[in-house]
Amino acid sequence: MELNCTPDLAEMRPAVRRFVTRRLEPLARQIDATGEIPAAALAELRSQGYLGMRLPAEAGGGGFDLSTYCLVMEEVARSHRVFTLMLDASSGLTPIGIARHGTATQRTKYLPRLADGSWLASFGLTEPEAGSDASALHTRAEKREGGWSITGLKHYISGAHKAQVILVFAVNDAARRARGGITAFLVDANTPGMTIDRVDKTIGSDPIQLSELRFDDCFVPDDAVLGEVGHGFAIAMGSLASGRMGVSAACIGTADRLIELAVDHAKTRQTFGSALSERQAIQWMLADSATELALARALAYEALRRIDAGEDTGTATSMVKLHCSEMVGRVADRVVQIFGGGGLIRGVPVERFYRDVRHYRIGEGSSEIQRMLIARELLA
Image (cartoon, rainbow, N blue to C red; front, side, top):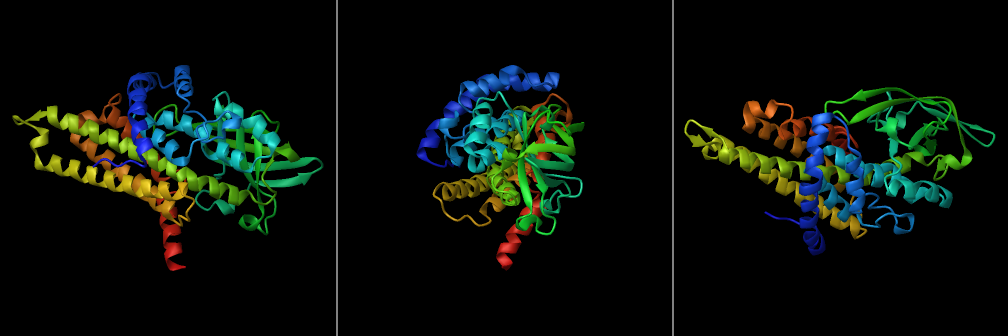
């Protein structure tokens, strides 16, 4: 079953696929071998116009809609998750937040640099006591003459140790919190009072790292406020809603590649005198995986159509993110099983995919949070 968002995107897909296969795959092997991201990776993505895809053209971005961005994300995810994070750093949560809510000065300062990849952005929401419950933030912002003093701790912040700007959310009115008491701030790297306490490696690939940020009376000027004072929670939730679609596209692309690898392996691997592909147990795992992938694509593409048409999507993005992230986990598990012992060896792509996809059920809102949002709307 071949599903595409639009005829135009169907025509675009083969060119993106060729780029990923010819230019990114060699770099993916290099990343796995060295644990480092080569400079060529950023240059390759920039050369195709894939950085800053969703940012406005006047700011140096591509000005593309969400569907086009998600198609590129889907194809890039067939190679290595690192590349999807590079797309997100230039077109994801923080850049989109600036594009939507930034002043003219903020947009001029940040967007061109994010669009060309010369600067990286990070999204500072999660705290030790505020993960899924983002309204429970402890980091506080107190008004000072000419600006704000930020004090608190953020953790599990993706790529913050390499970012030039971090979108930080802090409580300015503890009584109101999510109802007008959380403000978003653009904090530049090396701002006095902000320090990187530690950098953690994850279950996934070595270059995918999370930072812990500490703010000790970190002063930022008034023009660091993104949007209106007290409206930060709405900015965070709005960014995460579109971010779910990017994550879902990455899940779809990864699952597609995993199934392709499993089919090739099943056709060539011989056991007891026959190819694995002749075993019913293997056939059923492949059939279940292909069916789940087709359902994920149909669900995601319909949501993208509605978003691009300006329709009210309700909890559709939560449904898409829930299904796609759970789906790719099941597919990865089956494919490792099909590969057997070979699927457990470092350097074999399916082993790396298996570790990397585990993040998707947690980041941009866990599966449990998506279920809560869906149920809340049903019961309203």
